[in-house]
Image 1 (cartoon, rainbow, N blue to C red):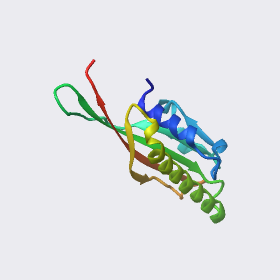
Image 2: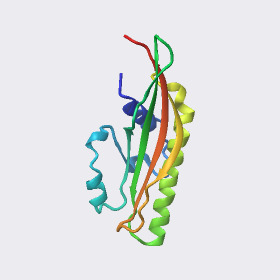
Image 3: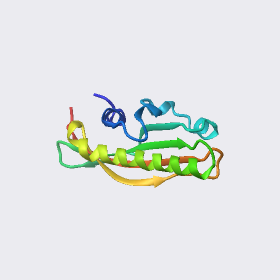
Image 4: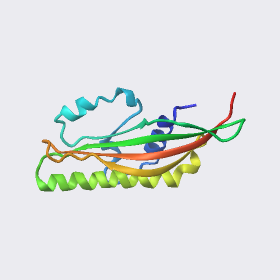
Length: 153
């Protein structure tokens, strides 16, 4: 069985439609531990798009004597760099960021029945844009709640 973050990433990547932004332009990371935030922030690679899923805290809550309900929080990280600081390039990058957020928000509820290990649902969004950098950084976290029952083995 895949880890939950890899399961969600595979779902997003497989169901991504060929719309703006094109799937070919996005780098999907299947190993979130290999992401170096400092490198991404320091790199001047303009026009790049990255997407990965990481795991947040996982509190365990008892449901009964035989099973444990697990509430797992996953974070879909969306990271873009604008081509330049010009208003037109920044507007285009912001539109692509909005489209990426909408695509993730469309896929998770529409395809949640295909995930058998847990039930994902979009909780909230956190904006991490920094348009003062050169080239500007556009980043968003889409928080996803995943619930499932784990039976003792």
